[in-house]
Length: 118
Image 1 (tube, one colour):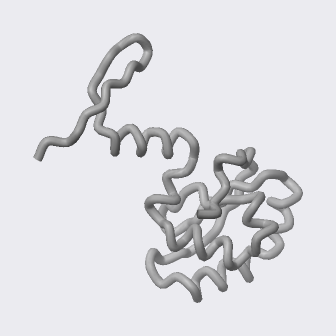
Image 2 (tube, rainbow, N blue to C red):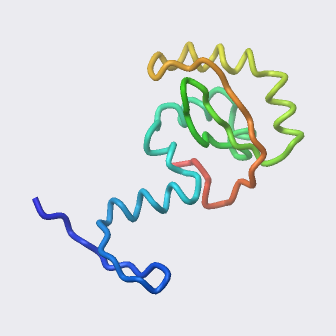
């Protein structure tokens, strides 16, 4: 099956890229790939932490059972670290697969375009 191709220009070199590949590249470069891979995880994260914390954080990645959460500030990172056990317990109750063994928090600017309300 032929996929529609879109011409892209990268660094002066023209190459053909499918729209799906271009979208994946955009999401990956903006730290949003986890939204596509783990939509239930991102949805449950918002439910577990509530709207105020969700507005200042997002699921960044999921590797080897560990959910990586990007947070807007070091103070929020510290607050979430104190609640890590409780958050992890609630996520495990809500999500059976993929299996979650831990949570890590990183400070990373959360842009308006990263808003997870969809």
